[in-house]
Image 1 (cartoon, rainbow, N blue to C red):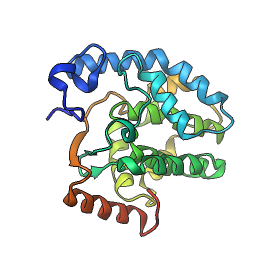
Image 2 (image 1 turned 180 degrees about the vertical axis):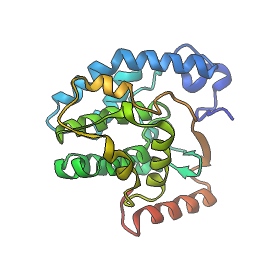
Image 3 (image 1 turned 135 degrees about the vertical axis):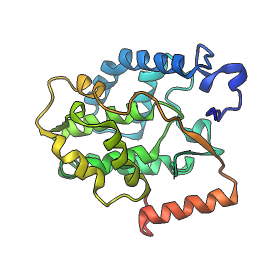
Image 4 (image 1 turned 180 degrees about the horizontal axis):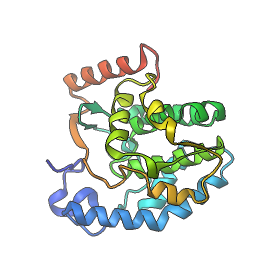
Length: 242
């Protein structure tokens, strides 16, 4: 099923891309080229900030993808607040909860000791927040890499396996705090900095845009609301955190 949260795929193509393309292969090539064009500027912006904020996450997405999506830099709360978005069994953060999840990830990620010890935990919160309708993986990878740089570490993404990485990430989305993604990433943590953070990110698995999201349904749907609250309770153990 086509991911069509705007409801105008037939006239404006996939997510209103500038080319009005409907072919997923064409759109992914556009996204990849835009990503490669914008990565250095996006990383330079992040490096220049005294601390990272939600606005920097939005700016990173805009820098990477404004050549493809007119709405680049807008989160789901802005342009799709009426729907739940999911992948597989996981419903991503409710549009009203996106910023809470990302702010928590940034708070923990900017605790250098925490980030150096639990980079997988930080990645899990960034991934669950899922701020955008597309381009989430590449955007949060840049944010995560900058947080890692500030903590004096890097992840050797080229040595990781996409299938194993995603297998470790999925339970992190459903139930954080169990350490599965941290355990998977531990052998790939390097002390000190990579010679090129951009090259390291480009080597990361799971950045090809495959396995598209789906619209779970309207946020006003009582059954989906109940399912989301159940998932939220499982994630948080009763705490008011995403």
